[in-house]
Image 1 (cartoon, rainbow, N blue to C red):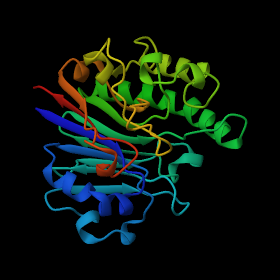
Image 2: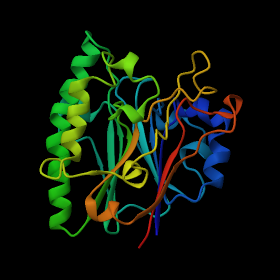
Image 3: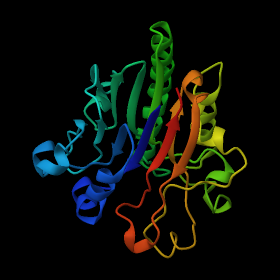
Length: 267
């Protein structure tokens, strides 16, 4: 059995003050993938930086206060790699992967973008270079008899079922036709070759959403987006037995604008 959780913490120091530490102490996950850590290791208190019972690895951004990803594993990783070989992004706190027995698990924070700005151009450069890496990662893993699971905040809602107000967002970053087409390629067996594990287990469900804006009453109205994914190679995806979003009971109990997404894999 393998249980993996991914969550954008929206600033780990802030999340730790709001309930992240308690959540981590209670989780049954074997691996936790964090995004938008927004802190250097020495800026974190010891209990957050090296929580008891976990091996923690970090990939902070070279721009302080931005991005940052991390991976927490119950057992020590066999190997750790930061970035995916593109100079622009290798120190941007966007990608980190570890090797565990039989599986490579990665934490991804894909740029959010904003139509008509340099941020969208950055997002496009990232996706253009990341898909070939995903393809190569899958091929290398297969040659070694390994599976791959890339978890994180992908900042793209793939289908209409993946966000509440899809009609109003068709021209907005995160639901652009070209972004959705890129995810089509990630999931195409003849191209990227990955499986959206949560969607495979919940093929007809609206959502389940994993992000809600802090503005208005988005959370209370469940006006959310499903942008936090666990993308697995087919062999691993076929072993998934359960997937769920750990949605807070109320707005006041949230410790991030994202909720943890958890997937349980059988043997």
